[in-house]
Image (cartoon, rainbow, N blue to C red; front, side):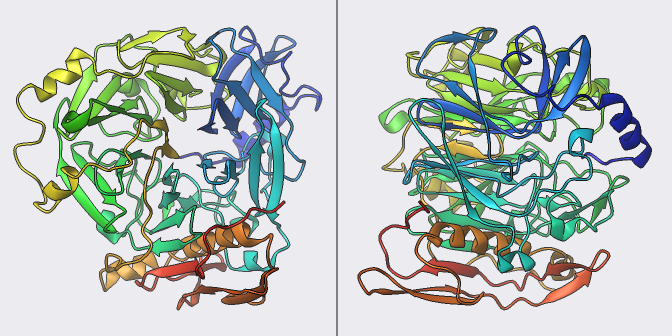
Length: 570
């Protein structure tokens, strides 16, 4: 958690203020000048790695400069490079396009576009002091040269923003057929709607939004079955393409906050021995007890998954790297290391690899047998972007060989496919599965091989790419009654608003909204299309009159009438 003290903010404004022309550029951001990158989001799309938002520290005229990153970076994955010589492309963003901390990027393989700026919060650095980015939704269409075009698809002036907001720090993952976003929170920097919240508070957002790229269907799911009141933050989610008829989403690490958090609220970190999985095909949550070298609880780590084996011996290995306890100090040294959770054995293995230093607020991705780590801050003294200790990764890029289980300074574009190291393979010498299932019904799910299983590349809290399925209907887990529902009142339907907003993004080429709940338009061929939202929520006044909606316990569905595809705006 990061909170702004007025005195600290003022002193930082005085000390770190620098000429406006001292911004990120190829000349300023070299391996020699680079210090740290954190709070960013990133995604692998086709043959490129894209990095958005966050904050960067570098040396400028012999002084340390920390700035919010308004630059969109791309890195070519179709060529070889070293971590010290990688050539990052610096791409300008439109002046009104947000650059956010703790956001997420989804890659929509159906359209070949990157979905951006739908989550996150404004930086607290002096260069953006007291600035809250207006609510808007953007799409980035990559070209084959590492550049592309940004298009704003929902504008700040749209009347729908009177009802919706932007979440931050949720657990999110995506597959070619869709994406999910679990939990998160609102703060005074997530949107103009919420900037009257106290500066030391976070309002957790219960529930999970699922979206199908192909059909355009959004479901707002109750996540009460996830635990507590269905809230989660600062963890990681990985899409596992191998098991279940439509793959599985695995949620790891992070915290399960209560209804309101502030600077004095202790984080309730989630244990790592109880693995939580979401089956999109049946819209069901499962749990399974893990064994082996159980990692310590942590937040703001990264995870990357990769499929191994073949035929009936298919496995899926999730590599979990670093994170922090939520409290700065030397205790974070114990979290410096690599762990692998191998499915379907549900066994953790600690990797005896070189320690590269404590790290949090980083992202990571799988490309063939290589895990690319992007950025990260040192949690022993913060984590703070103003930390003067230089990253052990040149340019904030690390490469881990997932087969050899070693760090390397070279990325190889034609690296061999992933193969399990003997340390991982030995897990399956006697049995593929745990001795018992925490929930008997899960036995059938995990023993079902997804016919579309594929090698996947992974992103920290924004998930990984692989073939998956997003639920198109069915019953959601019911919300508990009484006090638990009262807690969910705080912020539940902010997520519903989030889902409706993205739906309108996808349909904005073909129509403008006639009303908030129902839209009917006529296509070029004369076909009438209706978009309907099933929303029975009212609103209550909480937290300095900030409008917050109520979760009513029902599944909320936003969908298009039967159409094969949804077009993006031109």
